[in-house]
Image 1: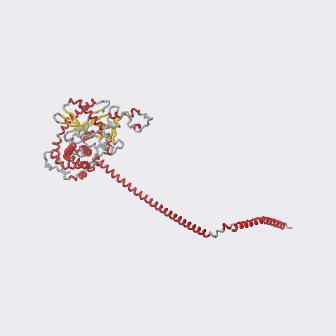
Image 2: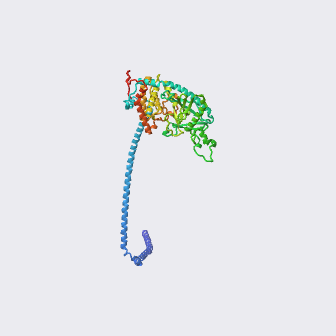
Image 3: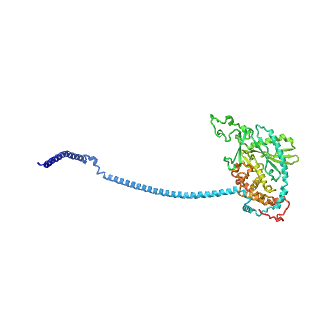
Length: 575
């Protein structure tokens, strides 16, 4: 056979053999599947489970009912979910809308805050300018003629005495008192020196306060007191015995003082070797088993009796003004008992509430009054802490007996003396204060005392002395300067502001050596106590207005009659 025939035959043989093999294998598998199917059909035939499957036709309606209920519950659930989705979408939209509103409100608020801040800045600038104008230019009254005219409009009908009447009144009523004051000052100063020397001799130098020489202050030593009886005011500095010292603290020294305590300070009695700032053991309670390495137990705890002997307030180290008053009265009494045999007059206390208000009574019946007031020096200056103000209401409402008022009387006297050297001869500044003080005193004798004092009048003069040029105080300008003082005082009463001359005044002459701490302090309003006490303020204003209306009558009463329309051509200016 040919070769390809042999190959075909071989191939056919191979394929046939394979078919027979597969076929032989597939037969058992097919039979197995058929048998499995038959068995499954027999097992699943309903006749095998007649009882279980017999109720299926009977429960069909129940199943359908349950399916309907299920369908209804699913529908309700679907509605609920759709409602929740709708609510969430509405909430989301509301939140988005609210966010937009908030964003817009924030932008609007930012714009509003910016305008508010700008308005506040403008307001503060205006307020600061106003305060600077009032506090910085309160002395520039001499050049503010328009303000003077406006302030005097309420009293256009008040007749103001002319130069001739004022000159005659000053010469006949006031000028003659100058010699009497000089003689009285000399007599009182000599006796006070002798009395203080006796006081030092009766005191225990190791335990009692050390008294220094007295100094004259006030109207008697500034030559402007006019009303009798004349009273000399003397201040007596004192210091504690060694090893103690005074540590003074003022309202402007950095610590916070309430507004009603401005102008006051406290005086602490310390040992000279103590730290100025104090140790922490004085401010905190150490445990029983703890000991301060800087202070021993003996030095850190002082007996209360020791501090009371140093005139301190009970259980404190602060100097008590009431204790000082008692000590000073007892010391003065002992000193007078030692030297009384040398004099032919009696000495007594004239006022119970003033420890140094003394009166000399001569056998002829005449008497001389003077005040000897204990004070404490502030550091190395001529500012003093004063225990009380005789005959005035400057310290009527002292917060406590450990608060001491500061007096600048020595600097006030020096300032007047310094300025007087630059003024023309026979300048009218003292005359203005004398006339105004006389008118005020006479008015108070008619209508009763008011809150306005001679110290307020002197403060007005001090401001004008610094504000007005020297030539404006020539003697022929007495009338104009007196009007300036009245108008300045009227302005202060209207605004309820009269600032202390030295406190907060940066223009104090350097020649005085005034402490810088008080120049940098906030200005002190002397009329502040009257802001809340409306009855006293009303009385003070009424007294001032009555004094203006009665001014011509009061002056003419103590002057030889001179017609107001003087023939020398002097024009009478209304106030």
